[in-house]
Length: 338
Image (cartoon, rainbow, N blue to C red; front, side):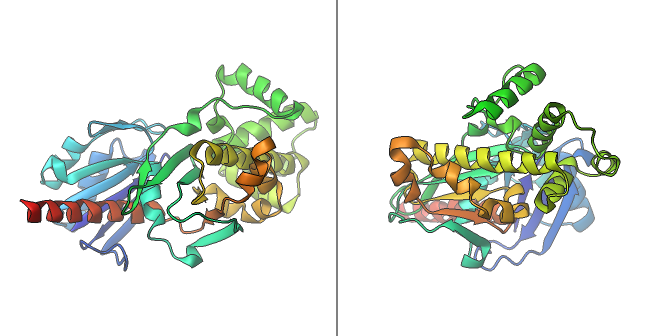
C-alpha cells in the first residue's frame, strides 16, 4: 500500500492507495490538512496512521524545498522533514521512503495527466522527446526541467524561483526598488506566488496615493489577501488590484519564457501551481504569452514551444505515485538480471 503526500506551505495533501494505481488513481484515503496545524510531517503521518491503521509498504512526498540525503528543510514551513523519522512511524525500511522536491514530484505527475487536465495556451510545434519545463506559482515559486532519458522523462529538481528578479521597464524597476527596501535581495518568488501578489499590491497602493476602499481593506484583513486581490483584479472593481494582476501575469509570462530558453523546452512548457487556474481568464487575455515570446532574437523560436496550464491540482500526488511505480519497476528489472 502506498502513502503519498504533497507538502505545501499552506496545506498538505495525503493519499493512501494500492500499489500500481497510477493510471486509475482510486484512493483508499484522501485528506487535506492545514500544514501549520502540525509541528512536523512525522506528527501528521502518525495522526493519519493512528486514526486509520493503514499498513504502508512504501511512501513518497513532494516537499517545497531542496532535498539532500533524505532530508529537507521546508522553504515555507518550520519543518525539517527526515525520511528516517517518517520510516520509523510507518514501520518500514528508510529505503522505501522517498522525498522529492515539490516540483520534481509535480513533473513526474505530468505523464499521468489527461487532455482535460490541461488548457493549451500556445499549441506551438512540439519536438518528439524534446526537453520540457515546469513553472509553478503557489505559496512559493517552483521550477523544474524534464529531460528524456530514452525511456521516460526524468525531472531535474531546482530552486529556480529564488533567482534574481530582472525588471524589464520603469514600473518593474520601481517595484524592484520598493522590494529591495523591504527584503534587501529580491527573487522572482517575491512576486510570483500568493504572498507575492500582496507585495505587488502594496507597491501599487503606495505609489497611487489612493486610500484603500474600506470594504476592500476589510476583506484583505479577514480573508486570504492573494485570493481577494485576484478576485477583485479579475472583476476590475479596484484599480490597484487590476494593476497588480496585470503586472503579475506579465512577469509570470516573462519568467516562464526565461525558463523555456534556459532549458530549450522544445517538448513543451507547463504552468502548474495553485495560482494559474484561478486567474486563467486573465492569463488567456494575452499579456502572459506576449511576455513569454518577447525574447529578442529568439522570439520566433520561443513562439514554437507549446505552453499548457495544468488544471488538475492533484498532479503532484500523481507524480509521487508514478515515482513509486518507477522505483518498483526498476527493482523488479534489477532482480531479473541478478
